[in-house]
Amino acid sequence: MKLENAIRILAGSLVLLSLALSQLVSPWWLLLAAFVGVNLIQSAFTGFCPAENILRRLGVGRGESRGCCDTGS
Image 1 (cartoon, rainbow, N blue to C red):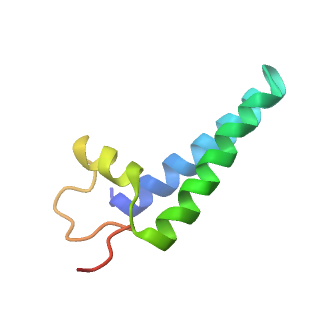
Image 2: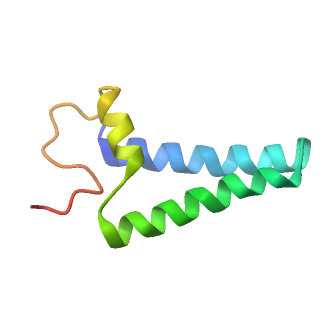
């Protein structure tokens, strides 16, 4: 699986999990969705993506030359 796809799956899953938990447990779980959104925005501007680093360490996207958050340098 490409690293870019894995990051999109992770972000989407966390947002959906946050929405479900906010309905079932507590509205405070919406903070998780907000965190994911802010992280996506900051990674677009800075090129730093914590999820990319974590997934790389787990072995996702091995053999790829670039991830979705690489700046191309």
